[in-house]
Length: 302
Image (cartoon, rainbow, N blue to C red; front, side):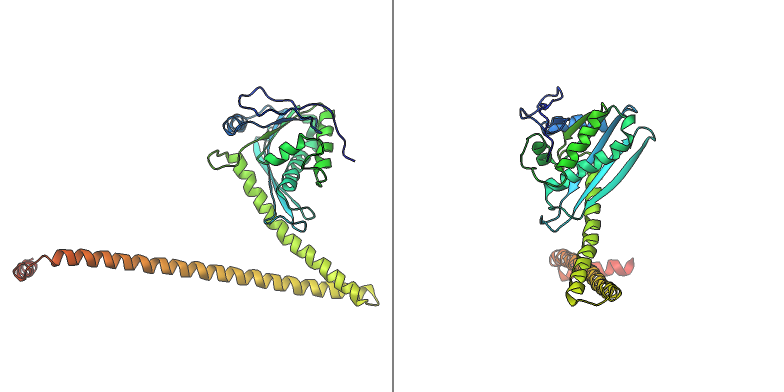
């Protein structure tokens, strides 16, 4: 059962904030500002080095396309560690999720809090930035659009644990549009996409294992050793076919790239020949035979 807290949402005193009067299940501040204000505030925390007791995290979730209940999600987490003076980057994957943008966003937020909790005694304030607008809007509404998603209760427990340690937790929205560039946000976006690619690869293995195990059980082998041998063989055969398909796709992609490059060069040469031929025709088409003779004499004298 999801724990529900009755505290209302608190807002930073920043201009352009959208009104939010609903209660939130989180013991956290949720700030959603207009794109310009959100970007300015995010830049103010990403360009300066925070106090050792202040941690600023950037998280991003990457859902499967198209979303599916049988597809994984990926997440990227990055932050500047005040203690070491260096950027830290992490990825997280979920193999059993709905694969939607909301679940990927919750995965990213939960993964970010996982990096804070072991070191919570060192911090007094945590600011987390994400471009998952739907998640932040859902977190401020009890029983809203996020109800029933896998990581919702986990995020609630994590924030409650940090609040019990007297840590101020702030969640901020930042725009993902190209006209609002933020290096840190772009960094975690790439991490999340990388994590999703890895998750898809692992998911293929998990799927093949389940299929092999299901088929092995249906064959009703008399011993577990025989069943295990059959599963291993089926897994190896399946992964070999998968690897062959991947290699074939890579070769086809490379061949297509070479063909497109050659076609581009051919068209470029054709355009050049046509332009030069047109220029020669325009030049020599206006010359008389006498002029050509003069030209020949000048060339011979030179």
